[in-house]
Amino acid sequence: PTTPSPTRRKRSAEDRDERNSDKRRNARSTVATEEDRAAGNQQAFDFLEALEGMQDRQQDRNLAFQSQLAKQQHEFEAQLREREERWRQERDQAQQRFQSDLCMSMMSFQANLLK
Image 1 (cartoon, rainbow, N blue to C red):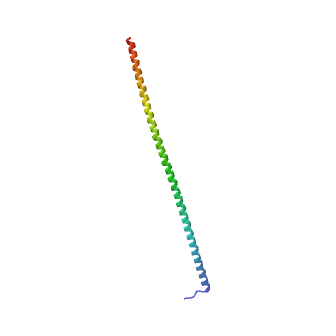
Image 2 (cartoon, helix red, strand yellow):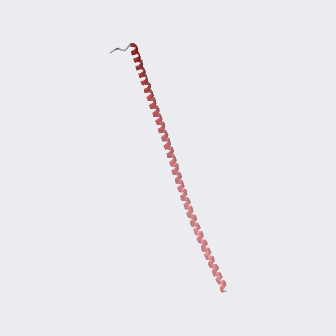
Image 3 (cartoon, helix red, strand yellow):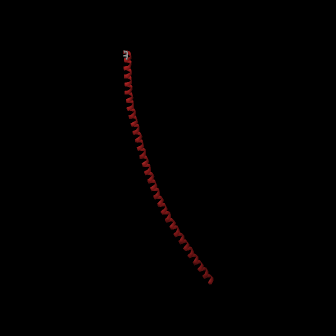
């Protein structure tokens, strides 16, 4: 086997130094990339948590609105039933007065006929 020339050995050492330098640079880049990725993941996680919080608050508002709406509907239906009952009573009283007035008029008419 032949021994490499001093020039060749020098180039070989320079190549080795350059490769080692590239490896160190790549390692730093990989660490930085992983840190960036971890920071991005944390941002995404924080965003999702904030979004879930907003969804929870919106759902709470929706439930409160539905509850208020159901309460108002119940009150409205109760008022409607009361009014219908009052109108029914007023109608029945008006019919009774009409029938009573009609009966009195007929009796008065018959009395006048018999005179």
